[in-house]
Length: 389
Image (tube, rainbow, N blue to C red; front, side, top):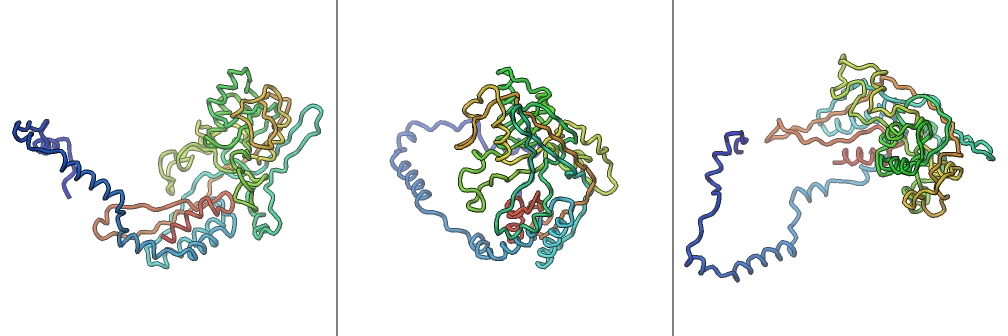
């Protein structure tokens, strides 16, 4: 292996690469016929296009060792219960990973970390408008007839947006499309004032944390995010197809930082320095306003009562959806959310296969294991694949 190049090493290379090649004498130039070069170039091109390289021995060996049955068994073991970060169920999922890797005689250890996590305590959302009875949303995801996981679904944490600020707001609704900065700029250009209102936006295009933070920066008192069927149910909904059902809700974090909010940019090791929970929740990486996610069905019900100018065509929903208006009002949302931001224990499972030739260098394979609900797709399809690899 050649030594790494330093600031002075370039001088060792420059003599090997002349600034410009010396010109050929006229007689030498005259002897070069382009036909052999053209034939050679065409042959090389067609060889690479038509003759596919054979798979390497190691690639074939690797693919022959995989088994869908064992990957499926891992996925089943990991997703039999909802396993939110910091819960007993997620610790049990970590145990499965440990036992699997240890059974292969790989040195394996568990490293716990104490980190700031967010859980819902109370939440409510109701809709009112002149001439309409008040609707109180159930904020639940329905199971389906014959669901084999219906009993385990009782362990699912209620729908929420992690790290949303605790608080309440009762105000007119403004529809903000995907909640991007350009969407709020468009509302301002149309004279729609978001200040003090409840911003209603749909998932897609940007991170949910940005959706809430953009609402905050536009002056909204609270935010609601719905899953629009136009984007998430282009075909048959589950259980008849793979797409989001009408009462399905996307939950997740709204924190924009990296790692544990109480240890910004350093590890949450035992005994380490931390900022307070209050300080962590007050940073610009936190949403700073109360917010809730709702289903596509609930989002459409809200939009049916929103008035004002008709929203642009690319702000509209799909087939069968009501016409979306910008607001504000006359629809009013009364939103209340109380969260519990607390220090909880999570586990990193670390296993090492030491290389022979360069044991001091690393190839890192990994994925997260905790899930907002059962996690069959995100993330445990990855965990199952990782264990099978």
